Image (cartoon, rainbow over the protein chains, first blue to last red):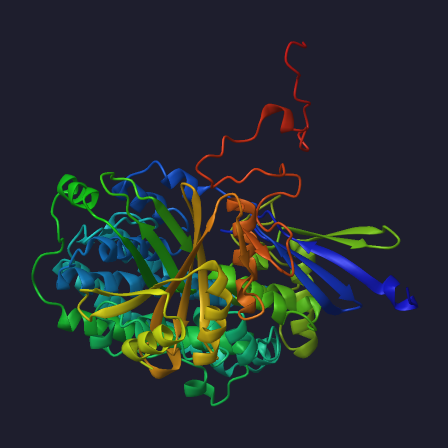
Length: 431
Length: 175
């Protein structure tokens, strides 16, 4: 025991907050302001989906898979369908693949806009939040027009899609892209690429070096922000993506340097917004006419799957990274023997936990928000001194205030008040 | 290295392994390699994969209960820097009365959370795992109960403690 030990403080962040889609708990050990250890505990929202799926048939699992996450609901559904199609050898019509690409990229746009707003909020730039979430409404409206719902649109099915794209949908999508190109993206680029305060705040925060990103299997923008050129759409030759010319995006093409910090992850997201819009336009140009479902009736499909044997893996690049679903068939039953999935946040969490060591506690909200589990809205934090038992509870507002004060320190000209309001969680007349 | 070269190299090093290549009929055909190997050779096989591609990425452990044996399948993504990557599923199985596998965290450090997950849910134990704590289940979850085993009957009533519930659970017969 040396004298230094008394400065060590353990901070549990999490687990429960209404704005989190996956509650998780980070236990952070501090030496003064520096983080010296991060431990992760999961399972606060364990719903036992694998166990539930043991008594659901293939079609019913589609809807279960979609409810894993509300933000990437198409991705889960799509990846599961891909696993079943590989297992049963179902050929998907080409038009259905193009529709899947269009819906998938629309979903990527809305997810990235959401994350850009959340990161802007965590550093105290609420204007960014309002700008990007307002722009996001337009994508949501289009998804609602096509699928019938703002989230969980259930457009995907095994062997194709349920709804065709009509002329009016295509017109609305093209209108939206034009609006984004001319009005939204210049503003977002100005904030995230050229604003000196944002750069000062996001640069060198939560750095994941390339070696760590590979060692910890980081996925998606988290990995590409560290310079790992990895994208399932490109590596797996997924669907019709090779025809559309997809390439992994790294910050090098935009800023010339790769540091692997929060700023680089945001640059990747901005780049992917441009890329998604291009992909949608090309997909609309190249989309052929034809069938949209391999098997028109669900009963026939279930009968066909009942005879299937073997196992299949589906992979897809969800907005946050690589998504994997595995399905093993049971001959003579319409229930799979095993269904297992892995979300991209899972490896990213451990990568960011490793990267937080050595950082300041004020950078925790923005670093965790940058991998997109929306933990920036952490509900409350209890600061417990391990030796004296002294306890202090920091709420989400205190933590955000720390973060905002750091921004103001860097640039005293920022006129935003240090008053903060939680994302999507109005409480006690704050709004 | 493409699929054929990999199958040749792996088959020469581990002649007893079962290697299967599947091809799906997507618009762009994609081949996937499935390997089955014994538990004794499993750790060597993982090391060999790392030798072939030092940047191979570990994705997932799929653990499942197949009657009297427990299966574990590991998905790897290899040669992702060369454009189209090689997707490999390497599987092994252990008898249920001796559910032990060597840990691969010394080869792929990112396997640790998946190994912890399989330990608590399936009762598939990993020898030499650096951090055997629970990851998903609460710390006071009863020992020896593995929720994803097919023959699991669940938590018995006498195992249930008053787990932080604000109201005490009444015992049978009491008022």
